[in-house]
Amino acid sequence: MDLSNLVLSISGILIVMLLGIIGFFLKKQITVVECLTDSVNALNVSMELVRNNESNFRLTCGLRHTNIDKTMDNHKARLDKHANEIALLQENRKTNTHRK
Image (cartoon, rainbow, N blue to C red; front, side, top):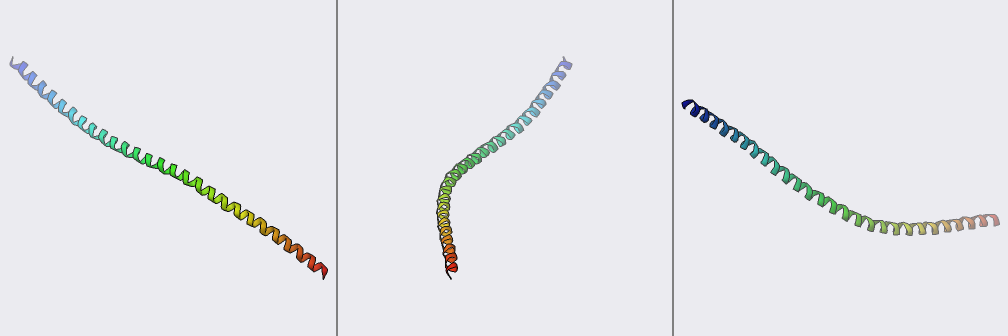
């Protein structure tokens, strides 16, 4: 009976030590999972901000393109007018030089 008590005591101590080791690693695992959860939440917030910025950029980009297109059309019309005026001036110059 003395030997069985010794075996039970040793096995009890070993079981408690193994449970302590398992508990230690489970605690570490829980800490890592909590850290990972915080990182994923921060990443989700960052991605939502990026999506909002991208959406805002698309809206302002469309408005800017409209303004740029209007400006370019105005410049094109002015350039066409100037080209016609230059052509008229060159033609008048040619006719004036031929008359002399």
